[in-house]
Length: 418
Image 1 (tube, rainbow, N blue to C red):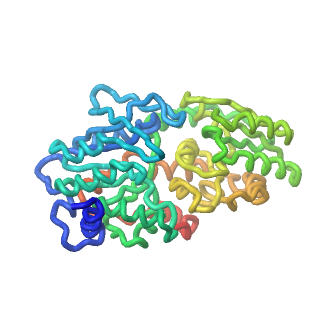
Image 2: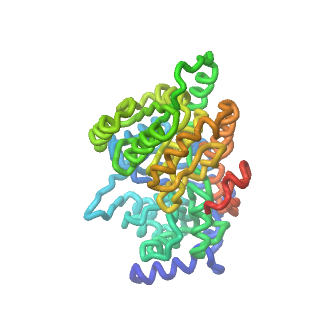
Image 3: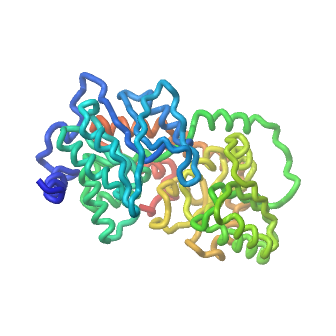
């Protein structure tokens, strides 16, 4: 059987099939804990919370990942001795990635379920998913899913790729809606959201809330950016927006950027040119220190796109500003409920962004209520325990929930973005 014919066969068994075997619909080992292999390119340090929670779930798990120290500047997680972590080196040849440990896991009788990184650029993941299906394993893809609803060649390739699995574990509701439009069944699309190290951050949050409240010494609006400084962050748009806001209003702004990276020098030159009051902190991995910066800011701004920075900011009660072009966004933008946990501006429009910055004191005039809104989103949706609950349902093949949890919390403020 050729790979092409194999894929045609497996696509027929995917989300909308009616002749699936029992194992293809759900994990059948109800009398024992399923043995799960989670294969990821590498495990970044900020995944500690969810990986610790997964290790306590109702299944036995083995983690496969590249044991690199850093990936694209991000430190990797060091697994504790009591966790089953196995090195799985990634090789890249002409933009195509190979991780042969995924194929070995798919061939192994040691595992009942494969949870694979949903990246179609990994050729070995295509093979692992197909082999996993043929050997009777339940195959799940974990990732962003579809990034847009465009009927492009790229998206049809992604559709073919996702059809190799029984189900998808997704970070956002919008991705589920798009997958449904491509013919995938709702019951096989599990929206588990995303999270950081919740328990550790919760302790830090409580410490910050217990601090004596110090009266503000300056009327400045305190803006914070937290990310690696690259062109994709589009902090130049933010700087121009701040400059415009100061020229067109009576507001004054203090901008702080945490992070280092290739765009740092260019951004410092622009700050000097625009005569902006900017504090370049540089790389900072002390969680308590970063948390204090967030907690003491009026707003965290991510003009390019916002991912886990949204979780970081909301965890410590600070609203978020990012753009509203969902095709250019990360799924975590769904946590930004306009007027409740943040503001969305028109992508690339520094004039619109400047208006949003000027409006911050009016929109978020009640600091305590804003904090409560932000805390609730993290405590009820974007945390490791919610992720594990959804992942467990996906592993056991239970029907997926709707996944539109933000609308359940804040209704109309979160509608219309799917």
